[in-house]
Image (cartoon, rainbow, N blue to C red; front, side, top):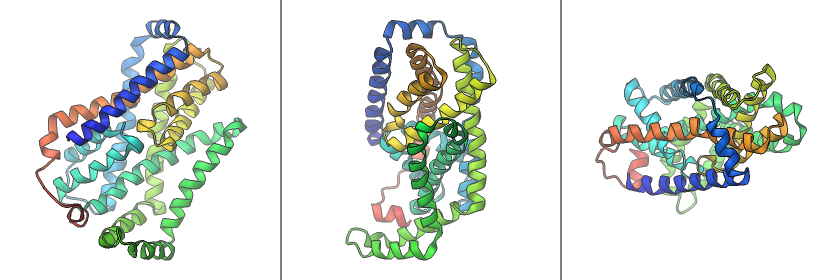
Length: 327
């Protein structure tokens, strides 16, 4: 827990720097004034839409656990693991979310190698869902084509390699001959078996379908943020809000920065100025507010869960790395 805290603290410090830096770049007094003028009566609905996103993503998480044969966990414990992982969202590349596999091992006995692909597939399906939401918007804005296509190529390339079993087994065979990797040969095969199952067409379709609906909800929350800042609420703005939010999620994830900090905020503010034509102070304020109501709301939920269920999640199992992976 202390190790996680130290990494999260670094992410929180970076978050403060991003908030201050973006506010200063957009003219701090004007940003403060825009926040003061925000219609805060929209906050419950905005957080409700964010929670809707979390709820559907939790259903996807629990569905994925069933696909890798982790069935001895109730909905309550599964939800605690899912929400607790939000506290580690601001670790570099969200690598801290891998701790969810350790919590699952403590609660169910399932090996980390079996459940770690669930964490990775969950993030990948989110990215694909956001890509689907952003695709129509990208077609309307050619400057975003190169980055969008490059990210898609990497994601689909990884899926194709995993689904071509002979190729994947050949690559695993090469990896097993490496000195530092050979001791984890069994774990690598278990990791691959779970990854193959999770990324089969049916499971991927279910996950991306749920993700598309959930992230559309968060896009609607972004629309309400813009409305709360006085931007005229039109159908075009709703379309633009969903597109910009989805694209910024992809950019933030591809950056591997803690929680996408910096990359997502700059992408949000920049696209609001370019696509919607908002003044820079309004664009920056909207970017900061939606991040408060999504990323930081989630991080706060994660810390609440850890505070309440820390002893349950961090069961006292002193295992060596090899044992943890194979157990």
